[in-house]
Image 1 (tube, rainbow, N blue to C red):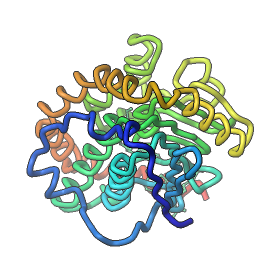
Image 2: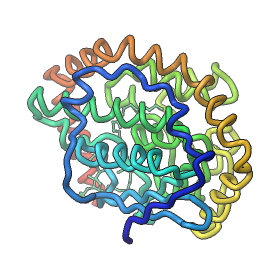
Image 3: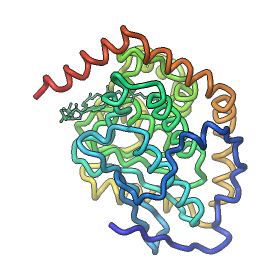
Image 4: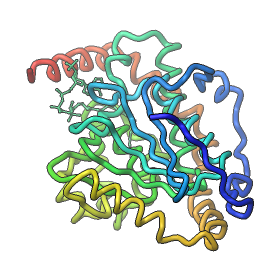
Length: 294
Ligand SMILES: CCCCCCC/C=C/C(=O)SCCNC(=O)CCNC(=O)[C@H](O)C(C)(C)COP(=O)(O)OP(=O)(O)OC[C@H]1O[C@@H](n2cnc3c(N)ncnc32)[C@H](O)[C@@H]1OP(=O)(O)O
């Protein structure tokens, strides 16, 4: 699908409202900046509605590596500049929305690659979480860990039935970073449940995720989910876009500030955990167990 960029009237330009965050040199060094055409995503924009659909397309599992995350991040930034109104994030797979971080790239990787991966995750999260665009995750498959992060960083979640969603971070031996904890708490009805979920690596079915408030709606097909996503974005009239974007920004500002203050520390924790021999040993076994399912 070709990328088409729409031009909305000047008053709907939202990107100018967002006070730029202080971006460290590291961000630029690791943002996988490239002029290459997208490899793992397709982006389409409906000229009539101003709604963009970004489709994740890195088979088989939409596992998040640095290049893929950089691509998603850049698409969001481009859409902001071009005055797009809303963004629907979905998957080309009929089974997997995203399986989270690419664990195959965490296994026996050198420090520079691990650092590139984690910084790309940080940068993608910051862009998605802080965007003034109205964001909907159309979860048409399993959404695990980093996949769940994409969903909970969005403002609204619509999921198809019979899939799994959740954060199994502690189970794989990684602590949930505080900024992602905050992101999860931000959408869950209770902090207590959020703590329970994240400490116990709880994985929900679509149906139980709806009951728990982790997702907002279920849809029986992707078509229905697309309609519901558009209806959510359309529920905000053009007149309210600026006010809502500023209000969203205010709600999320403290989480973003905490992240900026701790991002180096957060990276250090990830690097030291990943380089532990026991962690690498576990990863090798875990990857084998995924393969053994066949
Ligand atoms: C809000 C807080 C968020 C905190 C996030 C913190 C930072 C993020 C950390 C992470 O994301 S760590 C990654 C954790 N992810 C997992 O543990 C998922 C593991 N995968 C699965 O459980 C299952 O694959 C699935 C997603 C439930 C799908 O199951 P299904 O049976 O449909 O497919 P599979 O045959 O298992 O997998 C297909 C294919 O994909 C490969 N694969 C799966 N997951 C990953 C992965 N994370 N990284 C790399 N590759 C993955 C799997 O090996 C198969 O490959 P092939 O054998 O077909 O080549």
